[in-house]
Length: 226
Image 1 (cartoon, one colour):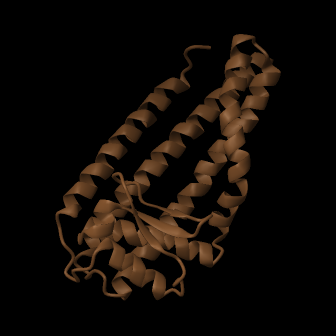
Image 2 (cartoon, one colour):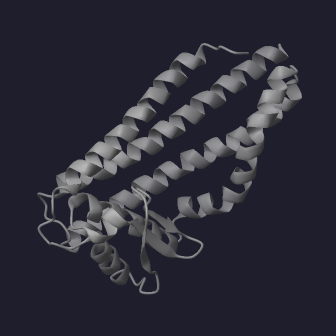
Image 3 (cartoon, one colour):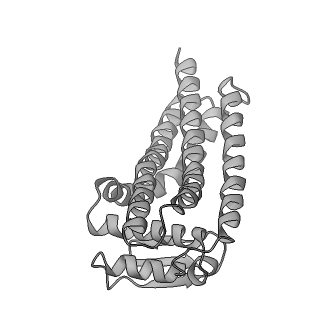
């Protein structure tokens, strides 16, 4: 109950997640010190990219915090951390355009983004209930509760797996459009790739941890049923 062979892999994945978080911050800080040749800020890049894709009604707002950038699909707003919003750097423009990539996905009804939006209410409920079901099931050796907990936890894992193509696609759109629109030069694309790839790794690590935990629970459930 308290230790399982899968825990070794989970610990490794958790270490990868910690490393990925340090890497994304380090990479972001490094390329924040490198200004773009175009001289545009994150806000300007986001605004131009939105306008050139017909999203004139989507505002770009500054928000406090570091790496707090996101696209709000409910209110249709691109929110950028103040560092990204106001400054001209490879990191700022990269992150800003990545978030606009999500807005373009929304406009074009990108299938994986639409799926993520549809399953979010279910996932939000399931991820909150799953830990209690699993803990109760393990404490009382109730395979029924464990099985139900696994089903709910699977929803959360599915959400994280669906998130991966959404994030990679947004980054791909950002890189292509940034070069095409002249926001960055071909030489600066290397820095953009480093910033976006580092951010993507955090999603990969989080999905890997959840997937390994799900496999662990399934293995325990199978053993208890035998």
